[in-house]
Amino acid sequence: MMSLWDALRMNMMISYQELVRTFPSTYELYQFAYMLKSLTDST
Image: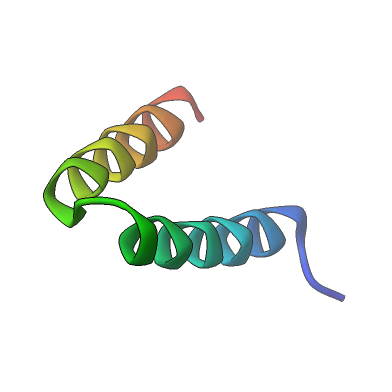
């Protein structure tokens, strides 16, 4: 069975790909990296 973290990570990767396709990539890249950092810091 897939863990919650795996599902979340997969979902974030899909969302990230959507963002890159629809928005200016440098800004989204920065935002995603920041979000990822805050997520990993909180655990």
